[in-house]
Image 1 (cartoon, rainbow, N blue to C red):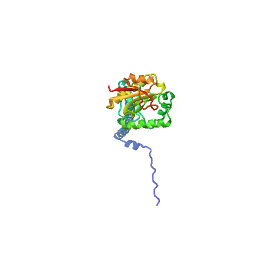
Image 2: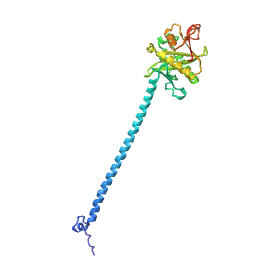
Image 3: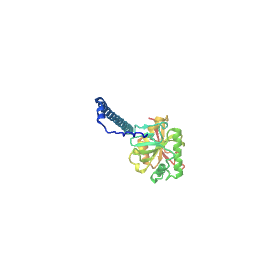
Image 4: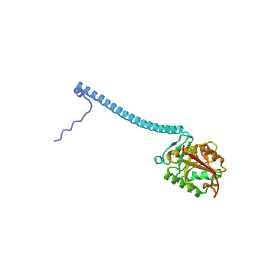
Length: 267
């Protein structure tokens, strides 16, 4: 026997189907549709709120970082502005990176030498004007020897000759206090590039260094000496309170050569 063919399925609504949907079912369907849309809107809103909050936190963190950086800059500027040639600020070497100043005065900042400072030292002592009272232009060997001595003395004593810069970072020379083996005393010395002469920077450097050393050591005096013809340097030493001693050979220059020697007592 042949099977009866299956009847076709029809999805077209019929009057019977339309009549079979109750008012309750229609209302439920409408409510579910609205609920689904509301839920979707809530999810979108939550996602947007989360994104906005995340962006705000990032911007706030960036703002806090920028504010902290600005505050540090302001504190550093305040430190620099509050210093004067007579009231200097020092930072003990053992508590400060070598790149940071160990001493700051009104217009200058000083830091200890490092083995990488050959070029700066050579620039200073290759200048013929500087060499006039320092035994002439220095050779590379003499420059390296001086840098090595200053680095070693700083590590051993906590003070030595330091590089000197203007507050804007321009290199101007060196200044500091070193142990003078010929007499067994601490000697204050400095050398500045010619473009830094005649502006009171040597006096400011000498006074700042002397004050610093009297604070960190127990020495009762410092000495300084210059070539007899270096009248400008002699005036600097006198301005900071040094008293002229009898001219004598102090171990500088040619054998037997006399120097103008000065002494500064602890305040």
